[in-house]
Length: 173
Image (tube, rainbow, N blue to C red):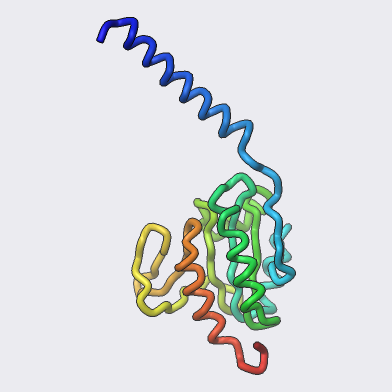
């Protein structure tokens, strides 16, 4: 291959990289992710989350960003889980936009979006999910409890929510 062909290939590669960067900066969908469930609390400030955590036994929190494609992909699944399993005072679902409520995200060490955390009686608490193994998207504690689900891992999120839903008193379902 001669020098001019190599230069042409380099120029094409550089143009492709520049196009990819420009596309990701200017054409990424940054519009708010629509919430389709009336059972999901959209947290706008720290006090709202504190209030929900203090009034509900179990809370599943989705830390997300509007610009995040996996967050957009998992949003309808999270909404459906809320519609199917929310129970006032017992099991609640909340979304925290990490770009708008930064102090909450940093307080809980959220570094990837989406990250799902599970709270019991106001504090982060792992959930025992039978058969759940550690993997990049599933953060397990030393005693094997699911502490966080990172990324749009539908199966892991559904498994944790099903365990939490079983703890809701039958009269409340």
